[in-house]
Length: 479
Image (cartoon, rainbow, N blue to C red):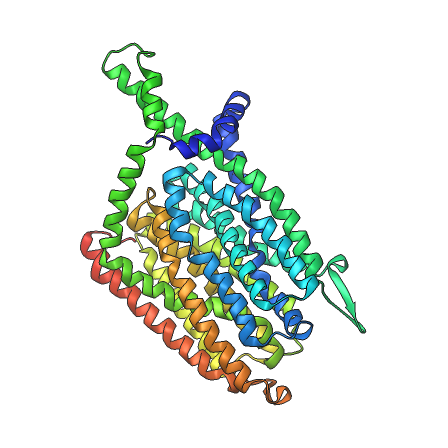
């Protein structure tokens, strides 16, 4: 499979420079390093709970308006992913790096202008939609770069960038504590959103440039494999090595075979009944998890005001990172050593998410023990984003992984928006009446978390149906 004309145009000069000056192994290490560093910086949207108190107190946003901003962020992150995945599979991850460069920095620059001028919240919501899309483009570029360069280690090549992405919110929450990004309001300091958004706009400008270069290494690798394949064919046919080789290479670079082959496999994926069963499982588990992150700030303020929001975000990020770091490698180990299916691990993580929502609904581990909720929620959240793509990679393969995983991300876009709106409506209606009476109890919002618990339960059931009812019957018992 050769390079498409778009991929060739975007990487031609970079490939020429890199291949002349560096070895293939060096380029692979460079690409993975840049990809992982990009993931370490990509999770600025995960810091949204730190923005919400400022949006509420300083700009007067209601919880419903905050959830609209959060929902458009999620829609921007997840809804374009099928298109982003398809583009990456057909034209290489480099096309996503270009989208990152064009969207990320300018969007944060405009967001800083919006908060400086205190413009309509809809403008901020739309801007965060673009930030969400740019986040996915950067993250997906890094994920696919690692997966396509080292395709044999499924768990590690997915869990490493996923882990770094989870760690980015931990690093970011500590960076945002710096005085240079704070403003004094009365006797206390609070986050200065104008400075924060300016900082992110500069950061993502440089990250976009470096990611463009690292994503080009995938194109180099694919081009080298193509040349080896051509050389092998020519040797077998006992033809001179240089006979027609340039014409063959040019015909491959049109990318016609690549697009046609991808389309055929992707159509089979779309006709697979287990695709839609798993899609609803993703919706009913990641949706409530995303809702929790968006509203962590208001939830902590209402039921455990002594718990600093940055600390709870950090705890959530730490356990999300531990989950991402451990579960990918653990799934590979269990499959290879003990022939234990990856779906067992995924089922455990979904049930852990159910337990977390149940605890919140019943005011368990509230007040001074809220860190337990943050830890459980973080571990579940990280596990979902590690094991779902790993299972999908195992079932449908690497060639359409970008398109397949991207298609599944429609589910979180719908789920996080739906569950977020429900939370915002209940919170504004019931939890603003008497804040003092809410401390130590989630009674005003408990119904939302009962709904979340049921959603996780149905998600687990759907996974079992896809796993036992479809995949095992097809001879895929270790998926």
